[in-house]
Amino acid sequence: MFGKTAFSLIELLVVLAVLGLLVMILLPVGVRSLEAARRAECESNLRQLFLANAAYAAETGRYVAAAPDIFGANRQRWHGARASGSGAFDGTQGPLARFLGDGRVRRCPSFPDYRQDATANAFEAACGGYGYNDRGVGSQIYLLGYGAAAMQKGMPAGGIQRPAATVMFTDAAFGQPYNNPRYLIEYSFAEAYFFVGATPAQLYGPARPSIHFRHGGYAGVVWCDGHVTHEAQKLGNFASGLGWFGPPDNSLFDPF
Image (tube, rainbow, N blue to C red):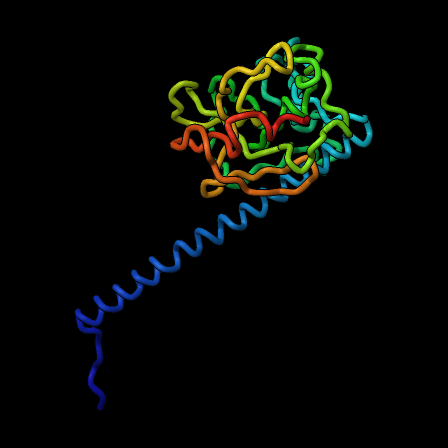
């Protein structure tokens, strides 16, 4: 007849300690693997945005305008359209919709926590958490200066002189309230470091940052030649993860 066996208290504590150690070792690996998958999905989304804009440019001769009627009815964006000046944008009605499969910009999976209900300026949900180089690609500000005429058309398809070094789309968000951000909203422009004034040579600022470094301190970027990189934050608000990855100038946004 065999005697009963059981764990002693010390053995149980040893087993629990080993399990706790394994969790401590494996959990960061799992988190890193999950973020790597999200990062890869984000890269795919950015590449799809580039391809859609390139197809639009091939058809029209110009890249899509970022906000063609911002000086008027303010109902059009590169990512969608809205029925009123204070309503939400519908991504299926945007100028790139027919180049994007189901018509919508796919959302960045690393940006699930954002505010859009009853929040000032939180109407850009159709942009998927991505911002467009509205000054250097999505307008003709560098040709005409900031004004209604410059916003109505994007840059000519062959007008980007350094496509491998000019931003097209990035991970983006915007802090609310403006001066002391406590939460983030979606935002559809990748703000260059300086605002461009009534003439292309007139720069002032810096702007309020919108590039969002949400991939472990990195932001996804698709450039005007179609290659995708992840860039580390160098300037801006590190607490909110909003800032810039380049030098304190507009060199990576300027089409010339």
